[in-house]
Figure 1 (cartoon, rainbow, N blue to C red):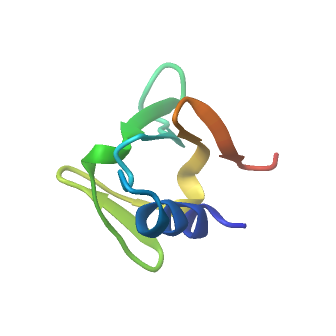
Figure 2: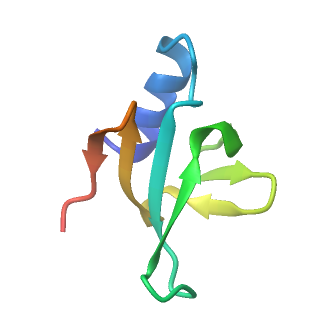
Length: 77
């Protein structure tokens, strides 16, 4: 299953939607090389991108998806 499919499934089947999700994504501008986005900050899920109020990111940058503090998806290396 791809990251977009996981996020859409959570959005449409979980009562709380994406509010309990944390995304870890690649960000080459940080020292650690990663950043975290809270699910409550995600405004929309598009075909190739997802949007927050400040950024638009492609799904391929997502490294890990956590839901209720449990890793439910991780990019294969």
